[in-house]
Image (cartoon, rainbow, N blue to C red; front, side, top):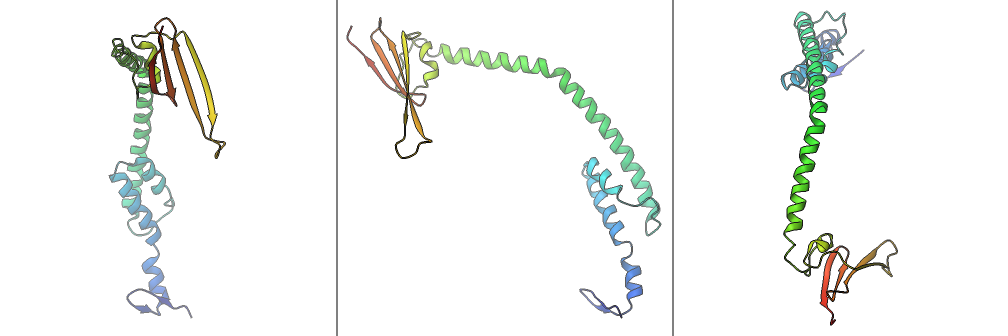
Length: 184
C-alpha cells in the first residue's frame, strides 16, 4: 500500500493525490517560463517553455499552448534584434575605437605636456621622465635585484643619466626615488 506524507496532512488515497499533483511539473515549467518572459529574458523563457511536451493535455493546456507560441515568436524577434544590434556594434566599432584612441592620445599628450617645464621629482612615474625639462637621457641602465628570501620577487632599478646637464635620476619599480645634480 502506498502512503504519501504531505506537509499539512496525511493521505492514504494515493490516486487522488497523484491526480492532484499530476500537472505540477508542467505548471512549474510554465510559471517559470512566464517569469522569464515577463522579465524580458526571452532566451530562458523559450528554453523553459519548450520543455512542456507538445502532447500535453492537462490543466491550462490551451493557455500554455498560446503562451508557448507567443514566447517562441517573441524569442525569434529577440534573436533578430540581437543580430541587428551585433551588426550595428561591429559596423561602428572601428569608428568608436579610432575616437577612443584619439581621446587617449590627446590625454597622453596633455599629460606629457604637463611635465615640460618640470624636473623629475621623487614619486613621479618614470614613464614621463623624457618629457621633463631634461628631455631624453644620454644613458639608461636597468638592473634587477632578486629578493634573497623569495626567488619569485625582485626589484627593478632604472638609472637615467644626462651627462651634459649633470643629472642622475634613480627609479625603483617604475617610480622616481631620487634626483641628483652632479657637478659638471
